[in-house]
Length: 273
Image (cartoon, rainbow, N blue to C red; front, side):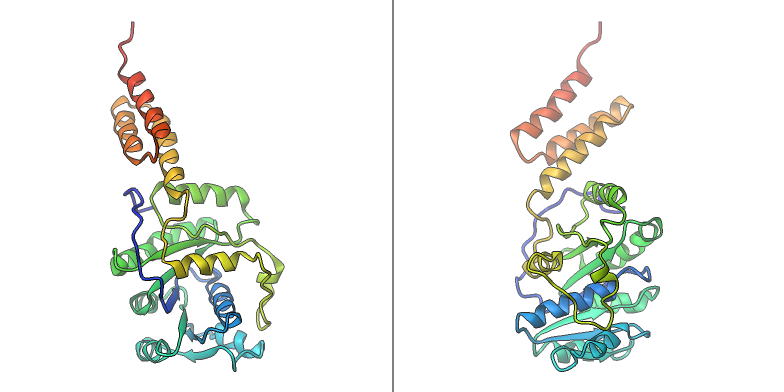
């Protein structure tokens, strides 16, 4: 992971009309995420347009196969036509950009033209290996000007790996969507059908956080500080442990966390008999 700074909550406009779904890894559920978000907006009565930037046009086929083309607008684009399509569609409502995998230029444009960026990924070695390449694009373009998040998918298929990856991402200060998408048949086999979205479907919480612009959900900072303390205590070199404990103390969100870090620092510097 390339992020190391403590999470700082930044305020962004609550109205972010254009949402790009981006990951350079192919098969990372980008289209599934894009169509489910578009369907939720449609259900709410919001005008929504899907920009299909993937040459395979899976998002466009999905909307047409489900008979939703009169309720969700769809435009297929390439590198030359994406900007104009997004600018036209955003005048009328929400825009979801479904980007392809393995195409840096298309991911770059999707992130550039969006107000919000969602990076879906499953906790597999291949997706973890390619995540930094996607993060490099997102961080270079977004900086502190617009919010982005990693969304963990297929969480119930790889529960232990999902937990480890969430810890790794949070330890690096990476913005996460609090909700995780489970590995369910209703998601995996929904292609060209109207997505089934129950009242407690996790995609509802995904959309809520994305629309809010809140990068770090409630409790994130506390978990982040706890991870820093755990990692510090795993270090054996005294100087490295001391530096890490100081970082944990600075990241602490309350007196209890600060006291715990200070207690270990005191023990580290205590004279030995």
